[in-house]
Image (cartoon, rainbow, N blue to C red; front, side):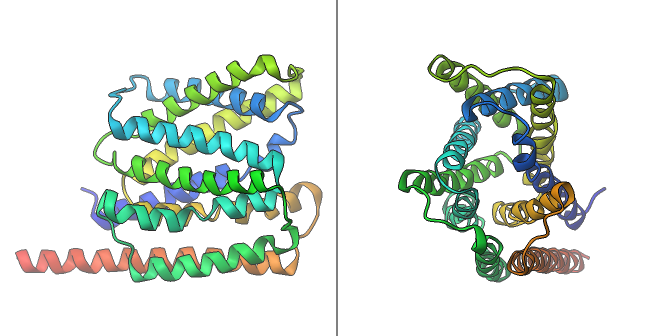
Length: 294
C-alpha cells in the first residue's frame, strides 16, 4: 500500500515530466508554417484522439468542475496562441506565469488548500527568477497581446484549481473536452484565415505536439494533480520555461546568457526546496499520526 508521502513524490515527478513535455512547444511549433489557430486546432485534434485512445472508456459527467476545467484549459490555449502572435514570446510566458499567485489565492476558498510558508517563499523566488530568465528578451509588446497573456495566466490558474477539484474522480476527461473545444474553434475560424499547406515536416511536427507535447503531458498532469495540492502543482509546472533555453542551445548551439542561467537556477532551486520541505512536513505529520494511533 502506497503511503501519502509516496503518492506526493510520484505526483511531483509526474508534474515535472508534464512541464518537460510542455517545454518543447516553442521549438516544434517553429517547424509548422501555418497560422496559429490552425496549429492550435490541429494539435488539439491529434491530442483529443490520442487521449481518447489512451483512456478508452472516458467518463464524461459534465459536472461543474469537469466543464469549468475544460473551458479554462481551452481558453488558456487560445489566449496563449493569440498572445504569442501579438506580443513578444518572453512577455507571453512571463505574464502567463503569474498563475502560481492566482492559484494560491483561489485555492484557499475553492479547494480549502492554504499555501504553506514554503510555497509563499517559492513564489517570491520564482518571480525573481522569471524576471532574470527573460530580462534580455522583454519588450513592450502590444497592449492587447500583454492583456491576453495576463488573462491566460488567470485561466491557467482556474484550470489547475478545477482539475484539482476532481481529485477524487477522473480529471483527464476535462482535457479531452478542452481539446475538442479548441479544435471546433479552429474549424469555425478556418474559413477566415489562410489555408494551411500540408507537408511531411508540418504534419510530423503536429503529431509530436499532439501526442507528446500536450497529449502525454496531459496524462502526467491528470496523474499528478490528484496527488499534490494545486499550489504545489503549479510551482513545479513553472520549471517549463527553464527548459526552453536548453532546447535552443541543443538545437541551435546558442548559449543562454548569464541572467537566463541565473534565473533558471533560482526557479529550479525554489521548486526543489519547497517540494522537499512539503514532502518532509507531510512525512512527519504521517509519522505523528501513526504514533498517536499506536
